[in-house]
Amino acid sequence: MTTRAELDARYGVALEALQIAAKAKAPDLEECGLELQRLKIKLRESKRRLMERVEKPEWNSYPAPMDLPRSAEDERFVQSFGVDNAAAATAFYDKYGFVIFDDILDADECAATTAEIWSYLEEQHPGLQRDDEGTWEVLSAVRYGLPEAQAIFTPQVVANRQNQRLYAALDAILPRMPDSNGKFDSPHPDPNSIVMSQDRWCVYRPTIKNPDWKTAENLHLDVNPWTYAGLNPSEIETLSYSATESGGERFPLRDFRIEMTAVQGAPRSTGEHVQGVLNLLDNREQDGGTRLVPGFHRCFADWVNALGSPEDNLLQDGPYDNWLLRRSHGGASFKFSSQDPIHDLSRRAPLRAGSLLLWNQLVVHGSRANNSEAFRLGQFVRGFRAGEMTSDRAWARMRAVRHQLGSARLQLSSLAPHVFGLPENYSDEDAEPRFRHESGGQVQCQVALTPESLDP
Image (cartoon, rainbow, N blue to C red):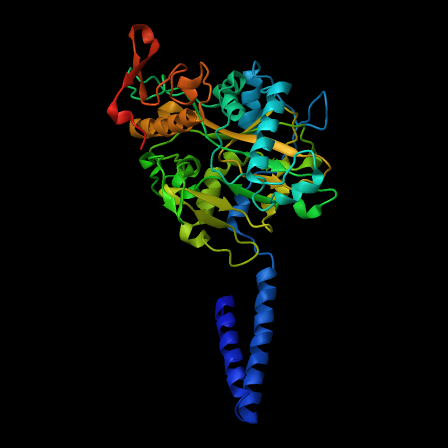
């Protein structure tokens, strides 16, 4: 059977021949015209067949549709939990692949983060004013409300990464590491320390008056399915977190994004990772934001087996074709076609201001456009256990974080050793934190000045 690409090529050749024949004799012109007409009919038929729904084997592995339980206090929002109710929250997470924790940020912290985001945007976009709707046009809907920077290091954003309630929520959800028997070389004090991502935030503008401000809707996975399944190698442990050249620009923070998509489940697991968003404003169904496919984490392995090879999933030849967007170090994002029936299984997860939405990285997720008069603002977070990193990557990562925090003169908390690999009271950018296990299993921090600790 002639493929669409072959028909396109023949159509182009016939069109070129017709243009040449236009300067030649009438019989040649007529013959070229007939050939062009025949190809046009075949091309139209080929397009029609491509639009027909074709059952794909991986569709059979999708989870059954799941309705989400609503909050007993306010049915506008999905059921949520306090950080002190870890058992119920974990049971919900295991079933649905995500969970919402209440009151992670208080009202003052939400307001401070929101103000910080606006200050950043006003600095980056001259003429923008947070209180003047007429200036919001300068923001882009194409980037899903994300800043261009790969990671943001501003005071309140960094403070949120060290939030004790956020840490407790992640600690409740992430599986614990086995005992290291004292063999743990890391800037973090314990294999079960929660390492926090260095990420960014998003802003969705109100769209009632300006429909053009709506962001595109999508579903995806921030993981290479074949790498996670151990079928492709991951080079995540070779990340240096140093500046790289790309198109004449330097991207010292790009490795913080790469580490998210290059995670591996086998043969050497990088552990379970959870993604999340700290919600800064009440986020109703119509305000747009995160949507998820509940239960997908439990069918992930069967789905990968049904996909075939990575090479079979690199291009979107038809409207029902999904595709793999490859990234470095074995990472990738998997994109779902807008025609894929998985969209019928997705559910929005509305949540209150100050709440935290966490989801298993193996859960298909994406965004829904804002269809309201309200803003949507959130800070993205991600966490994993320190013991999942090799020693070399852990130290390289700490140096990159230290460089960013030191340059910005940002305040650290008592959780800094766990989330950043840095002591709370470090004062010299060249100070290298070293942790060692003492008798009784206690963990202590020392600061050692070494030439090797200089930032790259």
